[in-house]
Each structure stands twice: as structure tokens, then as C-alpha cells.
Length: 390
Image (cartoon, rainbow, N blue to C red; front, side):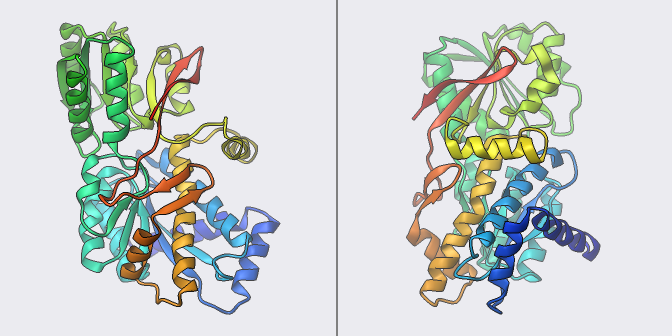
């Protein structure tokens, strides 16, 4: 990524903060009036490319959180500043962006997402001793990427385990087909589904990978049709999964479909219409029954004119700056110099964070977190809660 893109990204962030109203301006001014340097962290997300529809909404959520923190006085009176760079959800672009955050911007911590990007940039975090907070990527491998990569988002061994077990034991499904994207997002999660569904008494009758660049899944779907499953689990990306489901229905595959939290968004229903009926997805964050989440969704409707794409992901992205701010505050209270290593040690020591939209977060020693799994189903053209699995 070049200087032009870096400058555009920074301008985008500052414009977003400036547009959030008088309270935000007051907060930024109060923090800046102290004459102290802002406390900076990075955000590496897809602002362009095939995943931008979702990445941009997650960025907006993080921008709102930074603005809210600064409106409340920042971190001990110091402004929290977020340096935003584009990854296009592409590992090579992600490496360039994170190198910029680490080597040029000198941030002690950065937030990232998308499993392929998180895995690609983990060596940079380890080598530079800068903390990577993975917020939304689901590959179970993320817990094993080294001392400086942590997840604030439950990995696939949480929600996929719950979903596969529920499908076999509670829904009574005995024959499953698994269709998965052949990259970091799909491979490990598909294995988890296959193993858990089998242990729960079911049989996986088809197990098909597809290329990340595929636009036609006929070959794999015809194999699924021959196998005659009573449920199909799809482990893909937010952009391709609706297309796979649409092609399934065109080929006459009418059995229920399950997937993970990437498909839990209004865009799926908008794209598929009646074909979305009965789709089951996981969610790893509380819904609008929680007042704070209800207010958050209402803000989206009022200011953006719609609900966010990938609501749970945006909730976790909204909460991420609060984690960063709490660690910064703890270090500042102790008069400890803020580096990647001191941030990591303080974060691990704090371990528990009470967050605005996702509730209590406890970081486990093995670099994972645990959360309840909400199973959601499309019924009557809307998402509704099917079950909660603890």
C-alpha cells in the first residue's frame, strides 16, 4: 500500500469522527486540550474489494466507539486515535498494511479480521512484539499463532461445535453434506463440523471443497445432490455463501442449510428472498433483546438507513476500542511506558473486560474466549432465535 492510500484512509477516519456530532467534537477537544500525544492503535480491515460491504460496516462501528470514548474524555484525558488501513481481505495487502502500522505508525496494538489476513500478519506481530487483536476471524488455528495474537471473538470450535451437535441431536439430522471454501476460513471449521456431527451420531455423506475464486458451484452441488443429505452445512465467506445457497435451490436441493455467523445478516434475506427460509446461522453476540444492542441497531437505522451487515461482527468491532482503551488506561495509571510488550502483559493481567455491546469478555490462557452461541433461523422473511447453546 502506498502513501496515497494511507493518507486517504486517515482522512476517511477523521471525516467519520467529525461527522458524529457535537458531543464527539467536545470529547476530542477536551482530550486534545491536555497537550498530550494521543494514544494510538491500528485497524486493518477491508475497505475495498469483495468483502468491503462487511468490512466498511465493521469500521463504522469502531469509529463510533472511538468517538464515544473521546466524547467521554478519552483515556485519562488523552485522545484515543485509530489508524485505519485497507487490507481488501487479502493476505498480501494485509501484510503491507500491518507492516505500515508497525514500522511507520509505531502502534503497540492493532485490530484485524478475516482468517487469511490474521494468519498472514501474525509473524509480523510476533517479530515486532506488537499485539494483534483478531476481532471476527473464526479459524481455530488463530489460537496457535504465537504470543502476540489474541482473539476477542470466539473461534470455530465454539459455534461450529454447538451448531453441529444441535443439528444432529436436537434437529434429528442424520446425513449431512459439508461444502466449504478451501482457505483458512473454511478448512478447519469444516473439519470441526464433520468431526462433531459424526461424534453426535450423524454421518457426513459429502465433503466438498471449492476454490475461493469460484463463481459456479454446480459440480460440488451435484455431488451433494447424489449423496442425498438431510442438511447441508456451508462454511464460506459472507459474499459467496448466498450465491451457493441460490444455486443449491436452482438445482432442486431443498433441504435445510446451516452456516456460521457470517451469513447472519439482513443482506442474506435481501439477496435470496424465499430461498433464505429455514437457513440456520450462528451468532456470538446478544441481539436486540439487550437494550444497548437495541439502541445500537436503532442508531444504524436512523443514521445509515438500514441495519448493519453482519450485526454480531460489528458489535465486536464496536467493543474492540474499549478493550484497547481499558488497557491503555491501566498502563497510564501505573505510569508504565506503552509498548507492544507492556500492552500484552497488561491485557493478559486484566483478562476480564465488561463491554458495551457483547457483555463480559474473559480471555483464556490459550488465547481464546468463550461465549454463548445463539442459533438463528430465517422464518417468515426475518431472523429469529432458534436456541441458545452455552
